[in-house]
Image (cartoon, rainbow, N blue to C red):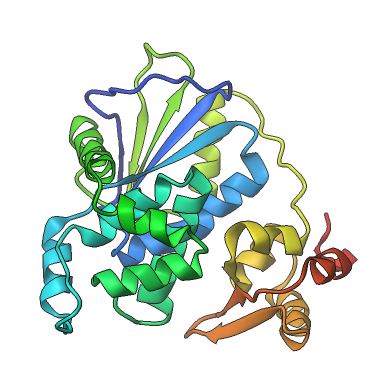
Length: 282
């Protein structure tokens, strides 16, 4: 059941210069958490000047165990119930954005490509796709730092009484105030309204970046996301994205209700040359 409630024991103070801190509790193997991703991205594109975002893994070990039991493991490979989550924390040791990129690639492989993410070899492949330092990643995935980081996330989930994924907790800059927790998945307008209420002010969205810059940041987006971010019709967004597919800049992944578009590796010259048409500007 989706609900709004106050966390009983907030344990984190705001250290950022931005007035709001958002904690997004996700299970990387949960499809609803994958559906939350476009909402968080649009919040970042429009209102990142107001908040910082921290992703916290609230992984259900039962889900991890079930996934591992259903995987066929080669003799030269191995799996563990916590391995995908520890791999995400290992990737974060190379930087927050690197960790986000690894998480995104992991979810794409699971939900878009319907491939394994439970084995060591599959995680190395994901790290390569996310352009991590592979030797560092192989070392970090065994490290105590990655294990402690994962344990810290589970501790934060317990302290904030987060029992469902996805959940989002908003904190303002007044450490004596309680946070506001949203459990479940809602429409974008709900999170936008909560942000405005926490700030107690009218929100002023930033202009979106160029489409090239957007794909460089997020690597893959759906037609629906593009249309929403730039305020155009799905048809207009699809036309522009198809042009870029013909230019070998994007690859298309057909889904039931939309198309997903993934960035291809291309030269900096192309990145500087091909910009989003005036259709996508506000």
